[in-house]
Length: 477
Image (cartoon, rainbow, N blue to C red):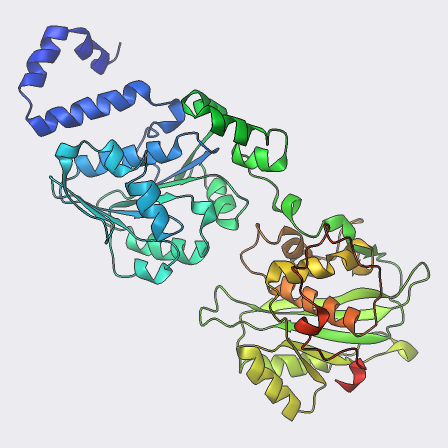
C-alpha cells in the first residue's frame, strides 16, 4: 500500500488534514485526486525526471487533449511565477481546443486558480503568478523572443511549418532546472515524429493509445463515424495511432519505377533535359535547390521512355546556383558515337528562378521557363504519376544490391514516393513533375490519359499550365 493509499485509508486523518488547507490548496488537491482516479494509464504523466519530451501518440478521441491540458495545468499550479507555452496548428485551434475546448485548460483548471484570461491574446494567469500563453504554429517567427519552463504542443504532426516551429520552440523552452514538453498528436509519418521516436529512452518518453481505450466516453454518433474506417490505412493511423510507412500513402509507388539492369549499357538517348527546382527561402538549411537529369530513349519493349541519369540537391541559392547549373549543363552523357550533350535546361519561372533564367539566357544556354499555372505541388505530381505507373521512367540499378536503385538515386525515389505526407523537402518532386510534364507536352512521351477519378486534375487545362504555348520543338526552346 502506497503512502497516498495509507493516507486516504484513514478518513478522519484525511478530513483533519484537508481542513487545514487553504481554499486554493483544497481546490488543487481535490482536482488532482479526481484526475488520478479517472485518468487512463496513457493519460498519466510518465514517471522519472530523465525525460524532457513526452510524445503522446493517440487515436482520435483517446483523450490526449484532456491529458495534456491536465498535465500542463498541474505543472503551472505547482510552480509559482512559471511560464508555459501552448501551441497548435492555428490560432483557432489554440482557443477552440486547447484553451476553451471541452477538454481544454479552462475546462480542467478549477476556476478558483484562474486569476485572469485574455481571450484575444490567448493568455491565462493563475493566482500563483504562473502564466500560460498560446502561440499558433502557423506563425513560426512569433516564437522568437519568448522563454518558457515548458510547453504543450497539440497535434504536432498536423503543423504546416513543423520543423521551423519546432526549432524556434526548442530555443525558447529554456527556463528552470528541468524543461518539459508535451507533444500530443495523432501520428503521421513526418520526419520529426520519426526522429522523436528514435530518441525514445534517451530524452523522449513515448505513450501510445488507440481510440478504443476511451471509446465508452465518446458519443455514439462519433463512434459510428470513425470506426467505419477500421481496417483501412486511415484507420490504422487515426484510430490505432500507428505510424504508417510514408511511402504507403504516397501518390507514386516505388515499384512503379523500373530498374535498368546494372550490367546493361545505357540506351541511346534521343533528348536530355535538366529540370531544376530553385530554393526560394533565405533559410537555406530548410530549402535546398534540386536537379534531376532525364534522358529520353526508345526501349525494345514499348513506347518512348525516360531514364533518370543524375540527381542532386544542395543548399544553393541564386546567384551561387548559376555556376553550378552551367557546369552541369556541360556534362556529356553516354560513350562513343552515342555521346550526347544536354538539350534543355528547365527552370520554374518564379522567385529565384526568374533571375537564374535571365542569367542562363545571357550565357546562351538553351533554358526554358516552366510555368505551373494554378496547379499546386500535389496536382503537378498527380498529373504525371500515370507516366511513372505505366513503367516509362527508369532508374539505374545498384551494382552492389540487386533490386535496389543506385545510392545516389535513393534519396530522390524516397522523397517522391513519400510525398506529400512523409517529406520535409520537395525539390525532387518538383523537378520530376515539371520534367515529365514538359516531355509529355512536347511530344516525347505519349500514353493514354488516366481515368478522371484516378488522377484528379482539378479542371486545369494544358493551355493554362503551359500558358497556351501549345506543342513546340524542344530544341527551339
